[in-house]
Amino acid sequence: MAIVKPFRGVRPPRACVEQVESRPYDVLSSDEARQEAAGNDMSLYHIIKPEINFPEGTSEYDPRVYESAALNFQAFQDKGWLVQDDHDCYYLYAQTMQGRTQYGLVVCAAVQDYLDGVIKKHELTRKDKEEDRMKHVRSTNANMEPVFFAYPDDEVLTALTAKYAALEPEYDFIATVDGFRHQFWVIDDAADMQAVTQAFARIPSLYIADGHHRSAAAALVGAEKIRQNPHTTGREEYNYFMAVCFPASQLTILDYNRVVKDLNGLTPQQFLQALAQDFAVADRGTEPYRPACLHEFSLYLEGRWYSLQAKAGTYDDQDPIGVLDVDISSRLIIDKVLGIKDLRTDKRIDFVGGLRGLGELKRRVDSGEMKAALALYPVTMQQIMDIADSGNIMPPKATWFEPKLRSGLVIHKLDN
Image (cartoon, rainbow, N blue to C red; front, side, top):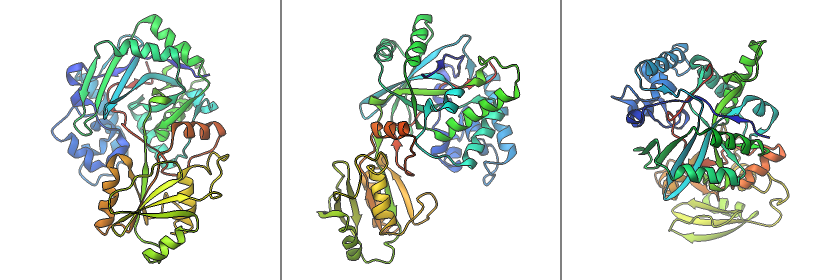
């Protein structure tokens, strides 16, 4: 069962929140962060992308960069741009995208739950990225950004969320970068906090939706601190890390599409003929065509759109991995026909989040940058949970959650 607890969040005053808050560190480049933070000393990018505090070209892995993150975190507190709540709280965070709102509870999750598999993952992590985030956590001694969890819907948590959502939020703003609305409430009533803790204690598992590297880094640093303290009681803050937990039914997973630079030596006609071995191929004309169901794909090639329906026998509905469209496309198109073996490293392929739309796929092919584009039907949250429950790992580049969490609304310190 999941262990969570409230914590004394470090937050910007209401008047400062729109100057402090930012996109997550891993969704933009150093140059983009430098541009977004230009003229704004209060931007959280000075802490979570601290390479922007140095001349262009400075490595984000330079030891001075991590030191700068720690110095700026302290400076933000000294200047009153970040202030710690004087007692433990839970928090409610709402995101509204295209008229649809999802409500997440901000909690501290247990490091031991991550180590024991109560917190379940569906993606592999890279050691270099883990180590980068671990260095950042060590230097700041804080979880600067939350991780993104999903949980099976719970009636008690749904009712409590509705209660607070009816109140005036502490923060309420529309982010200029994405146009999405973000709202934030403080839950500090003792009975309500106890209800949250007890409700999560009845939930068998939490699922990492987004932020696998942040989760690993936070948990591993916490485990380091536990080992370093022979007198640990288990109640110290470093035994926990910050997460925003959303009910699975509210989450939106967008398609995560592929574009390729060449057809592996095939002509367009030969490429379509090769696909016809495993797919029913239909010409859909020049208007953008979006996959309508699982196991249907959309191909853009030489100005025309095609639907590709996977034939019976090319996938196994009883296999939690083999039934996934990302697996079908990887096996039968990307690998078998195009000869691309490693989605993580092959430079012939790139990936486009569904928020950019089919128009972005068309643009990249029409520009000559890419030869063809493949649009996939989105993975479902149930598929992700089934895979995590089975102990399997999703194929690379399978999920795109939107909207992304904003950073800087609340921070968790590991020392108090």
